[in-house]
Length: 493
Image (tube, rainbow, N blue to C red):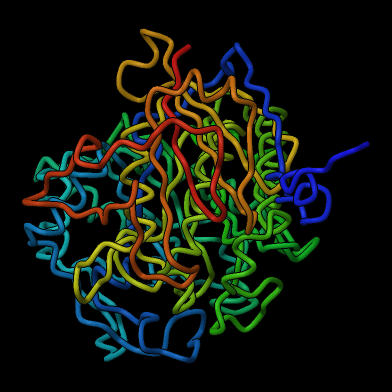
């Protein structure tokens, strides 16, 4: 006679608890042949913010490619801002942006009330900021607005004035480019201002001579073309100038760069991919960066094989970022993924637009409060080293990357695994992974639109500019990656 226990009946008829979805990952033993620069994670201060031009915050309109409101010039004499910058580690600061090609150096010859002038006091304050914070400097030299028949005959007299003054003051200039997003001049400055690839290459030859007559060791960067989500370097054949520019250079260029924003804000007159929180966690929207990076690398390899590759400007959404999205937890997912993907694709430097200013700023311009992307950048700088390893993941929503550990990892073989879980559910990895993990740091928030994040359950906060990884509680070792989290796992070799 069969007897059935209560436990057996429960097991037969009650619904079973579903198993967590599993994913498998494979980490290569061999590092990529390239390494990232020690200043890989860098940032920009837009010249409109620095000098008090037309900017985005509070503006719902676009004015000839610019925000609709004029802002006060940025004060860089701030101990709090210094501490925030120093906490990110070594970096380039890039000063450029749309008004870089309209600005006047030191004085305005037109006396136009809407003119933007970079005064000597502003330039001096910028270089004091650079020196205090041990930054390297990348600057966008004014290309100017002139008719197409004059392209190829760029005049450097205004740039010479700025460079001469800088040299006399002992100011550092490490990298320079000529003009900002020259392939998009037609959109910002009118159809007659749009340079062609061949003429621009001629102007770059003159530019290099002018720059090196004052700063012979400064590196030349270009062409900094804007790539749009889904569209790339539009519009063919009118403004897709990168390949033709590289092919027509008479001298090698030091750095081949591009600009990329994966989304567009509501201010943008053209939106091929809107900046919405849900779009930031769709892995398909993150893949364009890899596609365009490979395209740029192919052109570099064919035409300028000795040049570095840089992402010369990148933020979450064009036209200042998107409120309640670019300044929230949702933005950390694209930023973490793009930092890691850029390193894997051979980009030596990634310049974030911006350090301060706009909804996409790492730091709020008005309050100087760090935003979620700032804290993602802070922990990246402490954990992700120069060596890059290839990783494969069986789940496209679990983005996984691997670097040597930033502090000492290249010597003892330790690595840092970055796991970005775009899923709205947890994912289980092979238990053998957890056995090799020495420490885990998990970034998470209550919702995608949260202003504040936690690292291992604790809100990050600088105290007199100081914060260490050891200030966060240790997590028990696990092979489970929780939903909508960004994780850094320190692993032994």
